View 1 (tube, rainbow, N blue to C red):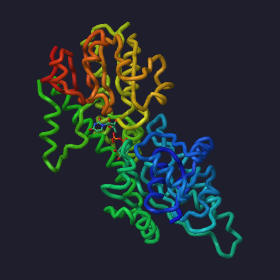
View 2 (tube, rainbow, N blue to C red; view 1 turned 30 degrees about the vertical axis):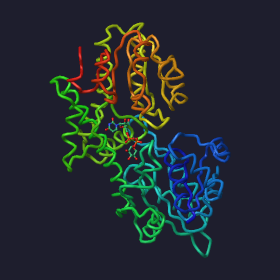
View 3 (cartoon, rainbow, N blue to C red; view 1 turned 90 degrees about the vertical axis):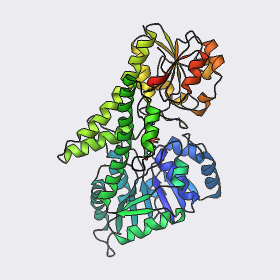
View 4 (cartoon, rainbow, N blue to C red; view 1 turned 90 degrees about the horizontal axis):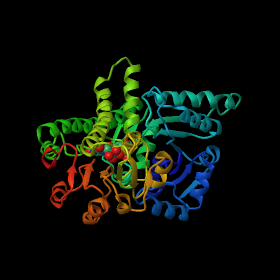
Length: 443
Ligand code: UDX
């Protein structure tokens, strides 16, 4: 099929490349001309495992192309995915300006049937607004034409890709949700995904939009739930990791997303939770459960900083090493990373921070002024009064901790992801603090 993707960010690019991989002809469009020029040279602007290889392969074969113009790029396409950003406004509402602009531009250049598919996370009822925008912007052109305006459909096909494993997630989805209002739209979207042989859930547009809201907010709730439990574990000498394991065997609960830590971050959960709270508010429901999820997440970072303060005493003039800046491993994405809040709080108290992240340093540079970005994990711990692990990159678990201990001024580790072997580190002579690990803490 001929497919266009508008918006070549994380979601758009991964979707475009993967759709080419399963056999479609795909144009990825973006209004950032510099980004398009980079992509046309085969440079991938983000780090996502497996993406660069596939992108180069299909670009070379001609199945994947890039364009800086919707009119030109979407001309041949029957299916146009909208994957532009929907940032949060100050009041938590999703800012849908980019979505409206895309709908308007598609309408202006449309001369044959098109199926517009929302991929970005949008509030319920956005589909209706896209439809109206297209009608308003297309009809005047066809007022005097005998044939009349071309037909179109709007559908919702929310993405559930996790950064760091997005290509893998695309190829092996738990389910594909398609929200449609016509049989034609359903047939086309089934055809798009047919090669994946995935479970397809067909609903109306508003329900598909709601599935996305509810799924992401539920996952955020799971994380905040276990983080709240971790706070109690710390107080009563229980181990949250074992609690999660014990809970997880219950099929109704499941072990996934029960990892306690310094809190969730990223481009999705914080923004999506805000947007769902606002959507509920506008519909007349006070979603207090979700408001608490948000509050627990903020407290988790603050309590981590308090723990550090408690154990290393005065933060002023202390040197603190940080391993991991990206919001999660296997990505260079720094958006709403927990590391940002934790580091800012430490700097505010007068601590000097030295940090290392395998992929996130370039993006971190502007976001973390005053932080000394180091060439590797060992350089980061030089002369440090304590080490914080904030992102669970694999390479940190296999570090040479004898070397680490030698380089540090004080052998204290705060493991914000319960990732390291706390008992082994304690045996080596480190003071080790995890999250909710009552039993391994030696004070
Ligand atoms: C998420 C959803 O998983 C995905 O379905 C949706 O499409 C986009 O948002 P992503 O933001 O890439 O994906 O990351 P995810 O792996 O879900 O992690 C989000 C955050 O939660 C990270 O900061 C992670 O460290 C944190 N997290 C995750 C926990 O703190 N504990 C957990 O158990 C799981």
